[in-house]
Length: 126
Ligand SMILES: [Cu+2]
Image 1 (cartoon, rainbow, N blue to C red):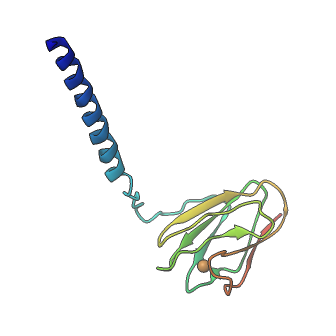
Image 2 (cartoon, rainbow, N blue to C red; image 1 turned 60 degrees about the horizontal axis):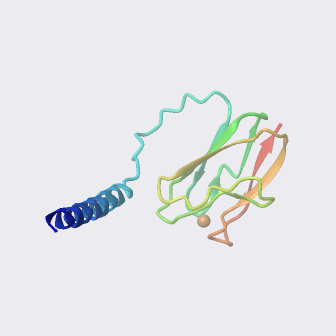
């Protein structure tokens, strides 16, 4: 009988510890790594700022194999989403960023799926 009680209390302890572990990792999750302002020694590629509900610059030109990095400078969330579907930043909150490497030459038109009124912009890959 004593052995049974010990077994049950051990199981309760395991469950409690499991819950504690879950809630602990849960509270750690919403800690967005605040990246220090990147001094950009990027060789090639391009950066696009999303500011004032517009992509700036509206057109960038890179070489195949280079990347474009989008950074949301607005308080409103935005996306950079290829109209043809080859890339999608997902939701970018304020200061959020997204990089995509373009392997194939071509002209890529992208938009913000959240704000249909935002003008589309282009990445030209040579
Ligand atoms: Cu937007």
